[in-house]
Length: 334
Ligand code: GZL
Image 1 (cartoon, rainbow, N blue to C red):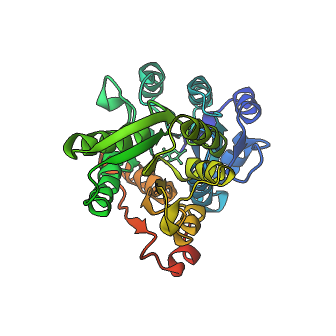
Image 2: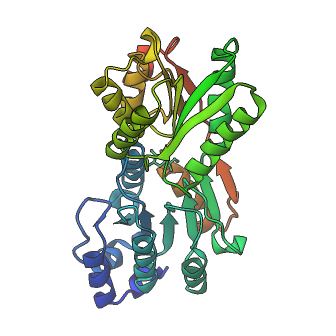
């Protein structure tokens, strides 16, 4: 069967190989067209946000481990360094070189209509992973797989309500993720509604650490300069929590199960669970990045002429420093 890949032009493939960061085997494909012709590979173009966090690196690794040449795929990964315009450019490269499928992990929810319309006009199915896009037409993508970020926020707030049920007043420092991303929107909404229904809860400082450790440290330093009497740091991912811990250590501010402010984090990466097991992070809400197998299942359904579920949430749990077992860390897949 002729795949779109076998009709690729050599110049288009060369452009794609030079324009994008890497393919599944870590090197830009030397001559994808030849490889595809010889092996009739399924070409998957993956527009990834970047490598801002342990979660993101695990997400990319899952895609690379899934879409291998041995399994009949060629994966081209575009690393956008957190810039939407670079994601859009990568998608246009994928369209130009006629990949078979486009996978998008969108940096923010808005601004995708035009390029998704172009992919649809080119007849290339788009699968959205992780964060959501606000598209004017639901037909602009065939499926979305990711986390229920609002639910993650509710799980964290539920723990706070139990943990602090006897506290008349709760002073919360809120470190948000990249503003406008679904993960930030959902986790923030969870906290906002928690504050709304718990008399005495107050967000005393708020800022975005953009999901990175470096920014997380800077923001925590600023929080501490503005407000010392914090009971809880609600931190929307592990890497920002790692930065916050550095700042707390520098300022000799106590935190964790030994006393002082309690840190709540999200992602539950292996590194995050190590901090949770050590009692530094008091509660860690899981956000599973292993989307590779889920995306492959969707692609196989499409190839079999089946209609995949439009929306598929991944199952997730949470870890409490008081009860987490060491085995959870050793067995962690990411
Ligand atoms: C969540 C994902 C977020 C993670 C961060 O699905 O979008 O982006 O929580 C990552 O670690 O940077």
